Image (cartoon, rainbow, N blue to C red; front, side, top):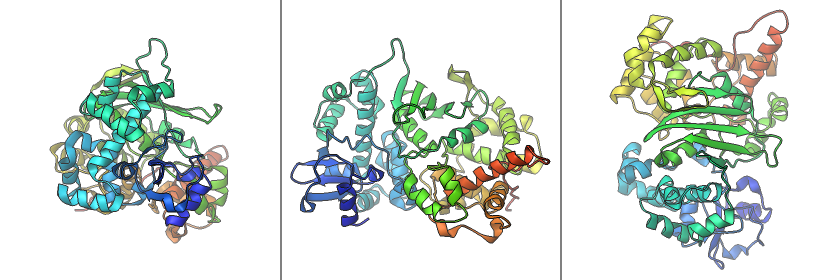
Length: 505
């Protein structure tokens, strides 16, 4: 967007752009979200910034009226597969808090000096400032949503000291932590030790993502319904347990995150990964507008506005799930993963019927052969990948782009283009992946486009949103399969049915 497109957006108070850029006003010294209800400033007094960190570094403080930090993030970090997008995904996951700028730079393959220069040019702020803005946002959320002690808030948000916390909150928001809390009026249930937070998102929101996750839930590790999802999760500092619930009948249709157990140092990473899992930074209006322009998808989009693309909470786990699920139905994959879960350990923080952790690559490599069933080549491929991850020879994650992900994974036996494309969708949030050889995609194309096949069309017309077209095709395939089962035949190609991918060596 150029200056005048952004200016028209703030003049229209367009909520779609909240979190996608920030408006700084020279005469007031504050920055706002695009939908701020205050009077539209003169264009000559406005500067637009890509990130709140850039506005901080330029000397602006957050608007107390529109709370620009309390908005969904931008989908740009998934759309952009350049260094800036990769860096922002890692910063959001807390890498700078855990490993410093040197650790972030090493993951991205740059020197700290190069990284700081490039991000400052691209985003208006270096990695330390970006991480600082993230800490301030997390702290504000905890202050206004919970009754945690101020010191706990400081360390949970990633600050190294209470003094640093107090100074940063004053600089960013122009208020002390105590004043911010008083303005939010947090209320906690009597005797409750759980943290409950509201997750902002852009409307519309299709809750079908809960069903997607529930169908794949591994008992003891995950539990899901049409409006809720809960699971255990291993994070850098320890075990965590959380639940996300959607209430379509409540005002604002809130998404609520309840954290039953977590090491406070892992809280920023948990919040980031949950947002990625539910694709809460997506711009559904832009996505639906592009997809609805295609006659093959228009009816599906009208019937399911705001469809989301599920992300990944753990990158190694996602590779294991993808390899286990090749050439079998979702139900069969869930059975196999339930058997595989037996080699994992019990959770250190059990509760809500969740008492196990998804096995680590080392646990799978050591004990997977005893519980896995199926062709020996596929089992050997999975165990080989697990061993490579356990030994450190295979390292991939949110900081990759589709090309680097393919370069790391395609040499593995049993991993082919489908697996790489699927993982690009789930791990990187890549919005423009089309899985033409996926069984359910083929069935979805037949259901929506008559006699056409996936091999004769690639939906390039809806780029850069083909991953969301894939989600609609999976949904269509599921509906067609249900209709077939209720009639005279059966169809086992449920959404996510994978092709078998042969060894590449």
